[in-house]
Length: 103
Image 1 (cartoon, rainbow, N blue to C red):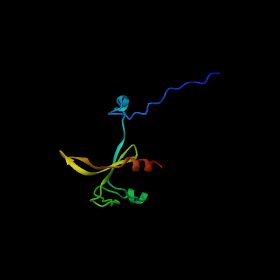
Image 2: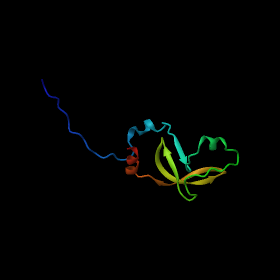
Image 3: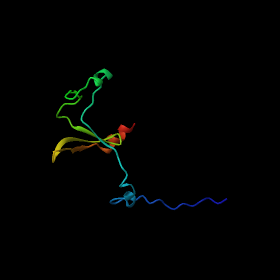
Image 4: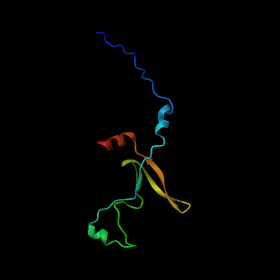
């Protein structure tokens, strides 16, 4: 029986955009922006009416959290554009911190 022969692996760093990245460019992702969080009982939720105020766990000047597919990706702040709300990204979470959040 003859052993297979393998060529040497080329360990060249990729330069620029990978050629096959275009295959996934149109894959939809879920983007969520979290202003803050709180916990309420069913009784408290059922008692909410128009005009009710729900206190959140963040201060007004704290950054919003931006999640992509449930993973924290960035932080930002609210902006108003032509009477619509938007988010200005102020910080991208480092790759190392994103990997740590997976575990």
